[in-house]
Length: 362
Image (cartoon, rainbow, N blue to C red; front, side, top):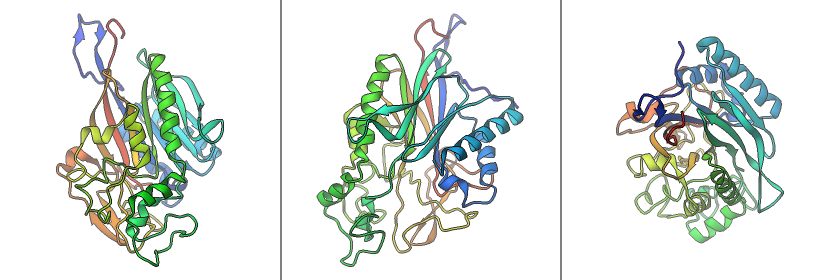
């Protein structure tokens, strides 16, 4: 069955001009190249056929050869099942990421200049696609996992000296200034600064901007006064660096735009309960480490609006080594269950954008 990539979200003027169309973007961490789940690649391919996104970003391939092989396999499988041709880009660096799109690639993969450490930011890259005449800059990302400071209030180390990943001898650390000090040593904030710089340059070229990735950091929109007693935040209200910088510079979190309340819609993406996993999905055996660390960001402007955001994956998470089913307000609208086996320890995120086209463009 051929599934159309473009769904009309607005009127067609005089039967000729395309006023608005939906663009779907899927983001997923592939958990060490899906090596921890039997038949993981086939599971990914079946999930992509079920979703048929306009674009999809992936991270945690183990090397560039694996990324090329997996994405080429996806292209072949989707074409056989649906007749639709996808294109791919991928790039290694401090982590290997990849992107699939059913729209022509007109630029990329391209490294993004960095104002911090190194000439380019090694944790994400840019691909530009032609979406029916509208150029969209797409980014695939995976941030470093060390100095994972959201573990400190949960009573565990952040993965770096002097703590490692061990349980803290003196108990949880709830000093927010210290938490941010540790967090900043990861240099993850450079992703936000470099993304914001590049996004403005793309905007000047008339392009829209969509960014997807596992950022290994919570959001300041989630660690609020209202959630201070949830998920073992232990009263901490934390201005996590990436989200704060992104919001200061015009980039918005698509999930939080659709679901602004972190209490009713926490949107946690890790660690997922995966019945098909060959190893444990959680890292902390005696804590509640559930967090939303997988994101789709977009550069806010009148032409692009997120109209739907859905988690993709199992309906349960892991806390204290136990399965914890989620309490969705409207599960049918909020989560897409796996098409079969689930290949990851994360949930994916599918965001539907409404994109306006200039008058006369079609």
